Amino acid sequence: MSFERVAIVGLGLIGGSIGLAVREHLPGVTTRGYDLDPAVRRRAAERRLADNICETAEEAAADADLVILCVPVGAMGAAARAVLPALKADTVVSDVGSSKQAIGEALSAALPDHAVIPAHPVAGTENSGPDAGFATLFHRRWCIVTPPADAAPEQVTALVEFWQGLGAMVDTMDPQHHDRVLAVTSHIPHLIAYTIVGTASDLEEVTRGEVIKYSAGGFRDFTRIAASDPTMWRDVFLHNRDAVLEMLDRFLTDLAMMREAIRAGDGETMFDLFSRTREIRRSIVEMGQDDARPDFGRKHNGDS
Ligand code: NAP
Image 1 (cartoon, protein in one colour):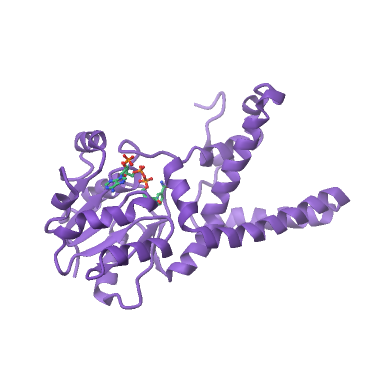
Image 2: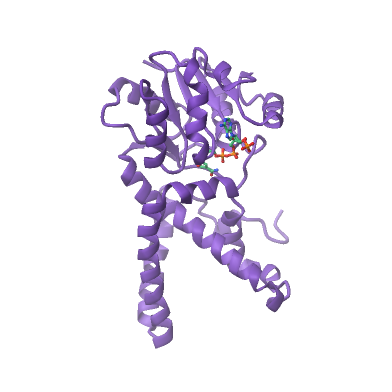
């Protein structure tokens, strides 16, 4: 089986990118889109984020083989309930939310008689809204599919092939494992970025703008992450609480160890950690997950 009619609910960065990517890569597939916000629907129509922009979630989902919910994590249950009356018996409902266990439970509770196969494209930017999407967002990025134990294999395969069609590489795993992995690779880094930028802004009076003036020393790389959408990230922390707290405890233990190394003048401990982390950066670049050029390929004064 494969999906020919896809409904996209939520037309921001991720939903908009899916619509554009389907048009570019899957010419036989038609899309209908819906967003709760009328201004977003208007902009989505101007940018042609989906073939048809609908006035209700039901209209978008009518006749769809696949419905993808691309709304904030906390809105997944409401979005699922809104499409429910339009679903066919064999419609597959998926999502793109950044945490998986809580969303899987919310979707199964809202749609007890339908096939729910959650997924999470590990791709994004700090921008949100209908102007943020682009067709190549998923190219060579991972998408993690978290099928429930009783999911029909042919439906899981169809969803995997859909994401591969958009240029993504796909892994499947159970939702608890997803949430622990992403707590380390995404959620805690965002928490650290939000916190350090907040701390620096609290100190602004002391430093009189020097935080911004000298930000190229490292601080500005945190500000990119800390500019991410507040609604999305509030919801991620509300819905992946256990895994985040577990990883946060591990991080705080390691941070305390580094604090002790600095206090004790233990250069060897610092050097060992900083050498290990450099290797991780090399592996990320080697796997094509980031730009190999110095300073992420940013232009500097005098560059053309
Ligand atoms: P976004 O740009 O803010 O887009 C979400 C859109 O959904 C907004 O226009 C929002 O409208 C709309 N919406 C909210 N509730 C709705 C509902 N019940 N029905 C229809 N539309 C609704 O957010 P995004 O970055 O695309 O994120 C969407 C999802 O993708 C989130 O679950 C997030 O965890 C996941 N994700 C994000 C990233 C990333 O880097 N951004 C990466 C991977 C996965 P309002 O603004 O009016 O609420």
